[in-house]
Length: 269
Image 1 (tube, rainbow, N blue to C red):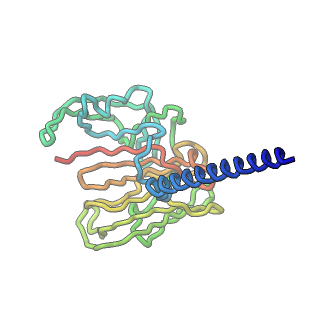
Image 2: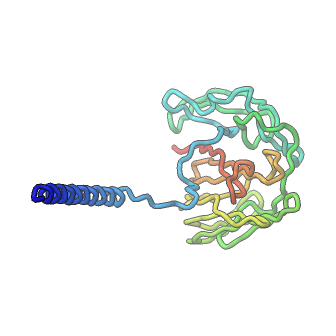
Image 3: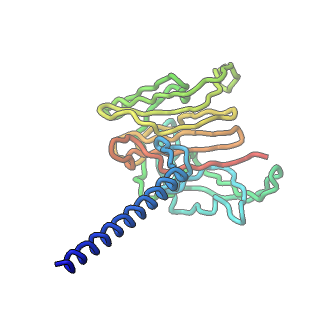
């Protein structure tokens, strides 16, 4: 009987010791994870719009490109690409008709390649699966949506609204080819889109501009899904040409459009 009690006491003590050790190790792991979590805290950025992302497919502009690390952005262009171009006020997708000429940039000291097209080309697209031909488009009266402004349009009997937010730091009148235009210095710019029965969501944001602003370049059904797609000019600096393409067919659940490609051409000295 004494032996039995001794054995029970021994195993009870052993079990309690192991439990305490496990509890101690668990606490140490929890503390370690807590520290790691604090050190690597991820701060969510809504939609991650302006973060560097991989393109779904490449786009190019009919522009001049500098060599960089023994390569040139124009090198990827080939006969399988297509182009979005304007003719007599209408837009079309067609096989890319272009030539590439070499040159030299005295400002930067770099060799260059220039893409020249025969048509009035807006962008060239690597995505060759898009259906060719005329594209249904939206006519828009203004190209800029300043903070606190909205623009509404109808496409296939659905009303869409673009709404902008941001801080206007200053405003001035500037001379353009079309006359006098108001230019605003804006920071923390946010552009949202909504539609009938589809909630508003953020799709473009820019923290600051250097003598530039976001402009609408195109609204129309590039991917032929009956919904509007967008091309925006979003130069962050006056020595940059940056274009972003959004397609509706790639939008996720609850979204209207998704950014599928972006290109930025630098021409600074």
